[in-house]
Amino acid sequence: MQSADYWIEKLGMEGHPEGGFFKETYKSSESFGQRGLPERFSGERAFSTGIYFLIKKGHFSAFHKIKSDEMWHFYEGHPLEICYIDSDAALNFIKLGRDFEKGEVFQAVVPANCWFGSYLPESSEYSLVGCTVSPGFDFEDFEMGDRADLLKLYPEYSDIILKLTH
Image (cartoon, rainbow, N blue to C red):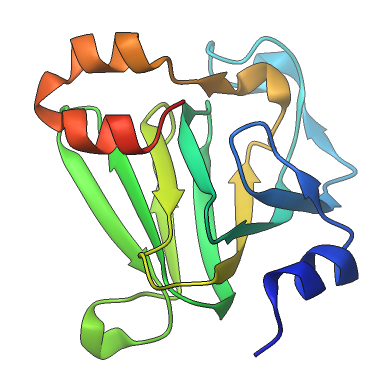
């Protein structure tokens, strides 16, 4: 197995505001116009976008939300824990990986407008995954979670909120 730094260099990845490293690999050349999108979008969006995303030991993806569904795909390394708070305020966990006997899955979807983040189990070195978003990702649709605000909204999830916020 290659190292995290190998993949970061080989794939030309850079730091992501939520944590971890990313490289955009696809952005559709066609787009939805504003009139063809739900009201939550403020302008046109590419049909779809895709990235490589890597989290290495000592890093995590902080709680954030976007306005589109996001499909995650496992590629390499150790399993990745994704957690999200759904529209019913329920906390959900997904383990992305290749060991189906341990409940891991190759791909999973985080629904639009859910607070979510991801992290590595303690003994892991890195996880290399992909994320596909449709309508395509735009930083205008990205909102970082504020620790104090999330703790007020979801005090019952304080442990994971403290773990996945700055």
